[in-house]
Structures are given as C-alpha cells and as structure tokens.
Image (tube, rainbow, N blue to C red; front, top):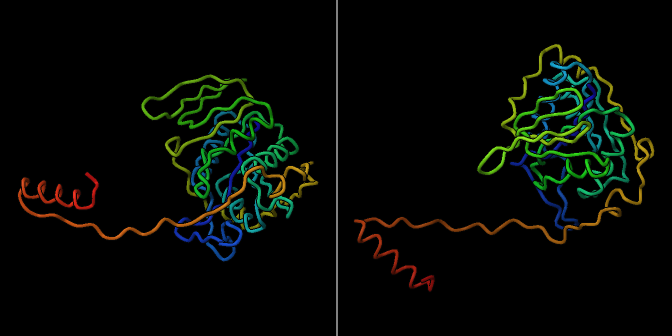
Length: 260
C-alpha cells in the first residue's frame, strides 16, 4: 500500500510575529514545529503500513528549514521524504499550495491513499487537503477519527459537531484526520539516528512539473489585505454581595453603558 502524507512546518504559536508591510508570517529566527494535526496523519499512515504493508512517503512544501520537520517524520518511521522548495512557491495561498503538492504527489508516489492533517494551526483554513483531492480528481473525506482499509476501499468515521458519520470511499482518496484519531509515537533512538544521517531530497518547481503561472504569490487568487492583533481588553470587575445586590448592581451598570 502506497501512502503519501503531506505535512507542514509551522511557527510555534507562542512565537508568531507578523511582517506589517507584507502581512505575512515572519519565519526567520522563529522556533518551528511540525503541524500537530500532521503528526497524527503521519502516525495513522505508519499504523496502516504496519497492518497492510507498503510504503509511507512524506512531502512538504516550504523553505530549506522545513528539512527539520521531515527529519522528525523519518525518526517516527517514514520510508521516504521530499522537500519541495523553490522561490517560485513564495507567497502561495491554499490554492497554489494544494496545486504544488498535488504535482509533487503525482510525480513521486504511486499513491493508494493520501493523508493530511485536518488543518494547519497557522492558517486554520482546512483547505489544502480537499484542494489536493480536487487537483488530482479523486474522492476526499475530511475530519477522520478512524480509518479502515479493505482492498480498494476505505471505511472512514468522521468527527462532526453532534454525531459521528461513517462513510465508505473508493481508493485512491485524500483523507484529512483530527487529533482524536491516534496518539503520535515517540521516535525511537534508532529512528533519531537514522534521521540525523538522512539526506533530504529537495525538488524545485521544474522537478515536479509545476506550472509556475499558478504557483507562488502571482498564481494565488487570494490576498491578505490586512492583518492585525485584536485590542487587549481591560480587566473585568467582580461584583460582590447577595444575589439580589449583584443583579441590581449589574443591571444598573448595563443601563449606564446603554447595553440594556
């Protein structure tokens, strides 16, 4: 079974900084991690390989520093990893990103299944996984909490707001996973040593046959016009007293502020 997993290296959320001129994340000098949902996707791919045999290939699009994210997946047990990196990809929105990843998958993997985390914590769009499925013209299932593969089909349990939904999908397909699907393994010492010695294959836009008119900032139909941090709210007020006194005081304050 050939499984491709798309991951993303994201800034540590406690360290996010914004370039006010370009409205993009400042990544230089900022601690980075593997997107947490993508760790679950890698873990699920490894479990499916252990059950059905085959190969797990990890692909990420990003700057050279994303090599560290790929090394983490090698330490976990991935068979092969690729970094797709080219200045032509700079500024890609989810449309251009999903296109580029789809090109890489089509070029590099004879895929039976493609797994992604449900969303990246730096963008929270949840659009790249479904976008890959559209570019490859294959089915997609989102928010998977359980995946069972049987030959050329998969039974997927989806986590919805009030109920779980079970669907059956033919393979190949794209499935995005939520954190509840598993607990990512801790890399073994053997895996970490293998990752340390690994030479990561870096491919350009030309290497994956990507049309550069629909990659990067120029090929992205969406633009970030403005980005800002919400104003910090002042401290609240604790009203003490009996229930009647608190209700009366609160009502009076709301009237003074013309809220009621």
